[in-house]
Length: 72
Image (tube, rainbow, N blue to C red; front, side, top):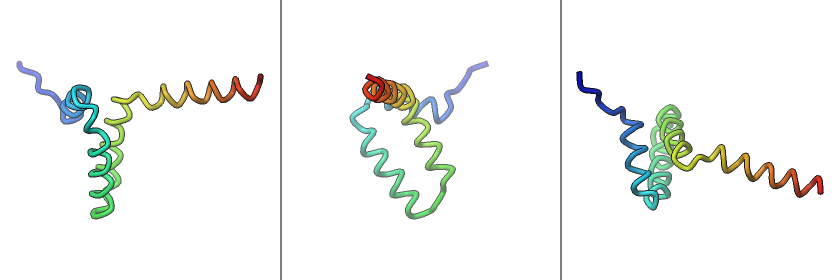
């Protein structure tokens, strides 16, 4: 049986290949949210971007650097 990709997988693949388009994508999803207030769609889109950019890793590294600066 053939396995099809999910929409999240397709979006992740696309943005990995086209990271320069993430800013425009974020602008678009927030504009759509302003029009329809669909928080589920907004959060799903943000989750895709967060996984691509690994925001949690970046934030953790920053927090560690700030903690080291404060303690030294």
